Image (cartoon, rainbow, N blue to C red; front, top):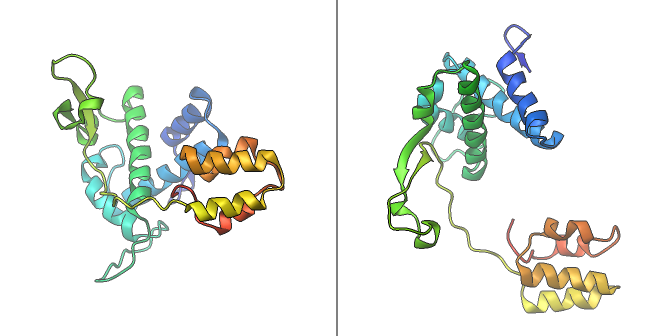
Length: 215
């Protein structure tokens, strides 16, 4: 990964990406996603004139930048009614990657330890559902991310029984019918049945209709 201003490698970013690819044995596509996240963070730091190792306390500004910037370093001009470039879900994904990048830096000594307190706050489990608190009556503490975009609770758009029946009638094999029933009744996404999906199966029909569960 290169510094755009000087076209020199950013050793800390390269080290983190090597850790993701080889230390965690993550896929190349996952490593590429992390690389895009690090690029966005370093670009914002450069545009804002901040040291990336200590800019975690300003992630609120970073969230605004993510919402309205294309990420190419151009000035952000967000007027009333302007459409956001990224939605809350994508912003939270970027923030999660940035937290991992900076937390990894603290283990190597390239990022100050106090940055962790800028990324996380200590919370207890009293605000968690009863099912998530575990056994025992004593209070439990965990690290909670300080910065997070609110994601709207969108209703799940399920395929109707008529849609499922039409797909079953269009199936040409028992495997196709099994996959349609699996997706419709087990609550899987379309890619959930991909390992068993035939190359010329009913994928195109599902894509053109309502998905059993929302993406």
